Image 1 (cartoon, rainbow, N blue to C red):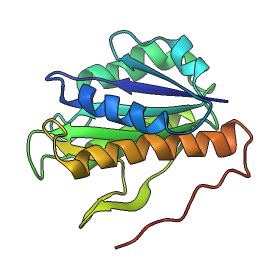
Image 2: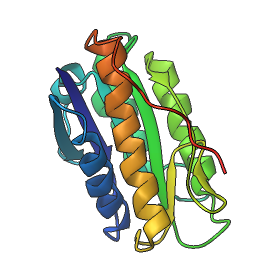
Image 3: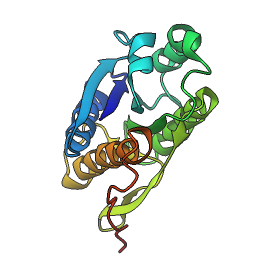
Length: 180
């Protein structure tokens, strides 16, 4: 059984909505336990509990939000070194195209790597010319099919990796990588 934490910060509700779709995707994998927490409510025990984490942040100046960064610096600092080998991924919303959401994902992945998380991207296409190599991204609230599909696919893939590695179900079929 794998424990999946969806950790997010959201000012406008857009990233929170993405978190809901990521959780929905993770729940598609049998025996996955999914828990969502905002950066305001999450604790070090939530990090200890999880086998895998999806971290979502609004894009602020091309990087993760100050609140999410503060969570990792101040709240999570006590578990540094205890996350080694857990699985992690990122998602972000921005105010517009070219707003830096992929950069936000990359800055989030760097933090996860510093904590010892094994991070991944998803090479799948969820629509015509719409992929999530660095994690799921959305412009404002995820309202179009491709943005929602990207969030769900990210959560599903996270739960698959957790099942395969953290939960010891290495024989689980992860399915083919789709390409367009």
